[in-house]
Length: 149
Image (cartoon, rainbow, N blue to C red; front, top):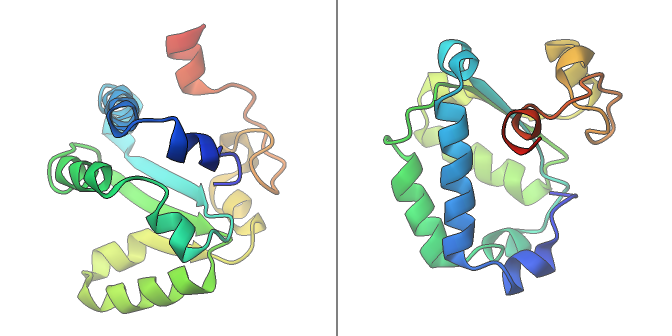
């Protein structure tokens, strides 16, 4: 979240452009052999974003379309979601929502308190350089290398 240009995203990026970008990224992941075989782990720097900023980042129409696309339809094997720098409101919200989650889902959504936990869990060689507060060793962006170079 710290690298997102929020004013641009709110004012200049249309919901159609956002959806198109998400669909493109989802297809890149769906057709990646390693992602399909091993599954994915999202490591998400929430950057202590406020609740209002979170819910107004994208238009409701876009959020609804994204929900329709991702819930039970997107064939991606999700192994885990690790969240860093989560604000208090999000930790409380996730605590409340966990009541309705399966045990498997609860285990896959992890609120990480210390950045070093990510490096200890996944290894520095899997973390991109300059990712948040970590000293990652991964030099290249896999998608950039595959599709943009």
